[in-house]
Length: 331
Image (cartoon, rainbow, N blue to C red; front, side, top):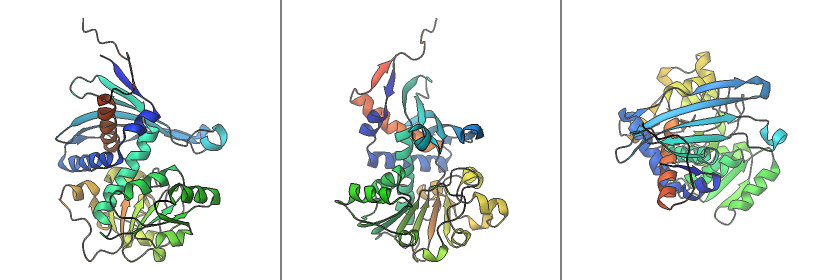
């Protein structure tokens, strides 16, 4: 037996975004049913290099399919300027849960980007107003592109406001999507007034004020993925219908981690996990809801779901590079 090597182009070619969104949605539902195994994300902090490594294993039984994988991923903020490398690099091993054979080794950088956008799309589908037409983006980096593509798959987005300190990034974003959407650079306040807002920054002090949000804005809080990070006004977190991707991860390293550690937020302020909404155990958006907020830390089950789509499509198309990775002689 051989393992399939899938580089970034292979991953991008076979990661049909709609299929990835559907698979991630199924993974959230499986998690709510108890049909996943997902140990806590482990961190190796590397202050010497201003970065860290994270190990993310999981198993998902979605009913129609099951799979297991582990992702080895980092966050090194100095990479772009010092080494001409992305801040986030990832490698994923995708395994057959029945035999443990490594079916594929694939690029996890593009995969991470896609599954993060897919999770925001699932949250938006369940929590945003059904007639949402405008999307605000705070941060015009690579993930902003995926956020727009994914959210536009679940809502008829027409207007996009992108805020970033780097005007060149704003212009590049507008040029990329200007033929499909009404895209304009704007302030954080402008972006926050949209029907849907995705924030994708690594800040440790809130940059989005409560009063800037629209009365029924849905927020995808993407940027906080480590202890100390915090994008949103505590008043927003207290006022919003607050949904997390995973209780343990979010209280440790999600958007809510700082006010949670300070006692500003408590159990009573959390509505629930997204998986419970997808599974039908909790209601999504209700008629009287105002602001809703999804705290997204990124889960290993999302990686497994995205990897499942990519592997099945690539293998079915005879793409990728088969190679011998492990010995299979049973004698």
